[in-house]
Length: 54
Image (cartoon, rainbow, N blue to C red):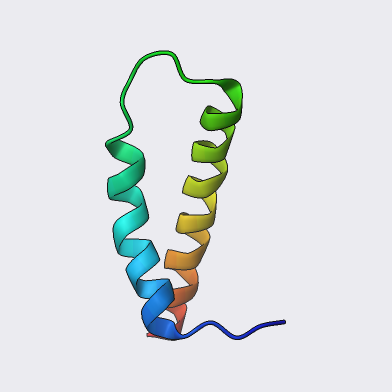
C-alpha cells in the first residue's frame, strides 16, 4: 500500500466537505449523489482515524 503524507490527508479532511456542501443543487445524476455519499463516509472514517492518532 502506498503511504500518504499526513498533510495531504489533513487537507482533504478540511477541504472536501466544503466542496461537497457547495455542489450546485439541481439535476444531479445518481452517480454524483452516490459519489457524494461515499465520500462523506470516507471523510468521517478519516476524521476518526486522525482523532485516534491525536
